[in-house]
Image 1 (cartoon, rainbow, N blue to C red):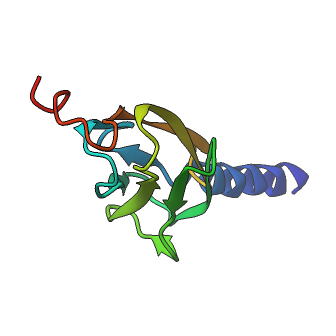
Image 2: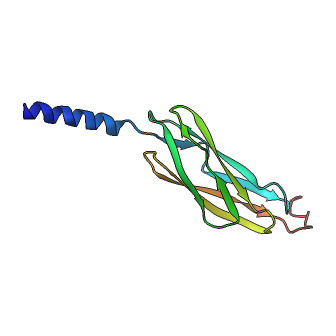
Image 3: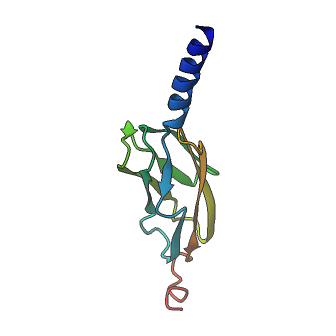
Length: 130
């Protein structure tokens, strides 16, 4: 009887651990390219829950205050897509090299996402023409 109970418990524990949320991003890098000073700094990372359990984005954090991420609210059902928006302060001329980290209940609980690019000086159009 104890053996049967142990096998039953292990079976249900195995099933419970097998069902997982999985997060797959279309791309883990957003390249702004060369953009004008003060232009729209909002970009989007798109992902899909490729698992068989609802995906919950617990938090999204950036490496500095110049990058503001916005996580989706609620669960992302298996097979469904979601978005994480990132807004970069484009009134900071020069190179963009930042990381945004996504925290979730997925089988890979933390995923780093990168943004890169270059913001021209306020009145510098020459870099855009290259």
